[in-house]
Length: 117
Length: 117
Image (cartoon, rainbow over all chains, first blue to last red):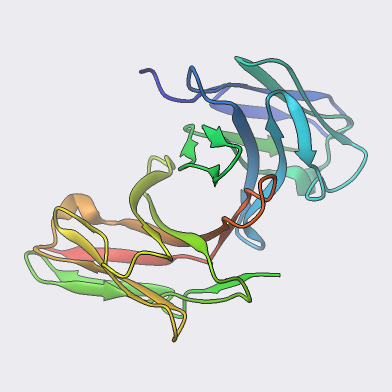
């Protein structure tokens, strides 16, 4: 299995620009998670989907952030407009959720390092 | 809300020796999962080991083992025969199992492990 795939690996943009991060989960997994890692706040969940439906988006910092999962093999996290404080590493993770037992282990992608100038 | 505490920001160990990383957590739930993830300089989050709270037996994966003390809410990671490749940030994480749809991982702040040749 190829694992969770994220693109781009690095993104440098200027304040005010739109940024789109992409994620392809492991085939067969039905839960997808977006995390952000910063020095100040550590690793925090932004949003997660189950069967392509957003379940918990309470971690999305503000309306500038949006996430979609149009099908089981693709998700995007968009920031518009971007700000310097959005600079972080963004991780996508996926897992296989069993309805009666909760989710199994989450497997992480390599992350996207975003720098907003 | 659950919290995870890693009180050791940095640890070092001589190659081939044994080191223990500490993790404590706070929860009112009786059933849950605990994880240790490793993040080497490549940034990739790699699962090291997981423990189901309902299992009394401590999990073991090759040179990695845990000391799970449920009553004390403690979940330490022991690395035996430390190798240079073990150098990384190690994150302890908690996940609820009681409610489907509450699948997010709550992470500690991490412990940076250095291996001394």
